[in-house]
Every structure is written in structure tokens, then in C-alpha cells.
Image (cartoon, rainbow, N blue to C red; front, side, top):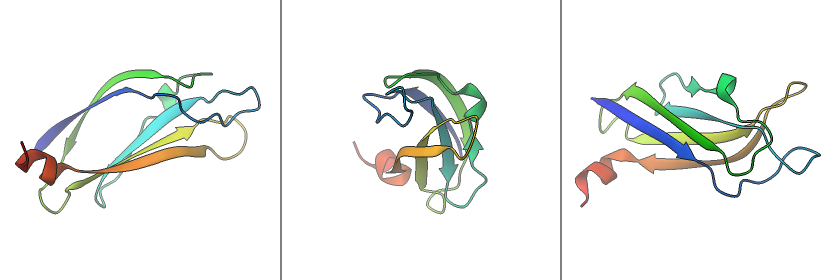
Length: 97
């Protein structure tokens, strides 16, 4: 099954940089499939980013039912820091009203 994932925006993200801001980007992953890393499209110095991106991902329900979305702060030097994450059970969403 091909799924379109609309990554819209972040609201009041936690600051991770010394300037009181973050440079957010997302990583998306279904189950144990290879994640999609959108690091090259990070949004500089923003706690309310408007991502405005669409991703097509292939999944098999119920095996790949969980979509993991992680938001990271991009850092040019050192490791990128996680801001937050969520898991969405797509099978439950598709079968519910």
C-alpha cells in the first residue's frame, strides 16, 4: 500500500541551540524499513517551522502499522539533538471513523 505523508508544521518546539531557537528537521520510519531522513531540508532558527513537504512511503498493514516521526535539531558540529518523537498507528487510523 502506498501512503502519502503530509509533514505540515511544528508548534512551539523546544529550543536546543544557545540562541534560544532550533534548526528542526524530521526522520520518518515505518516499522523496520529504512527511515527517510529529511536533514537537508532543515529550517534554520525556528520553533514553529512550516515544513510543507509530502512523502510517499510503501507499507504493508498490519506489519508496518506504526509510523515513527522524529524531530531533530540540526547541528553543523557535533551530533543532531532529538527534540521529540511520536508514533502513529496507521492501521487503527484507517479502520476508525
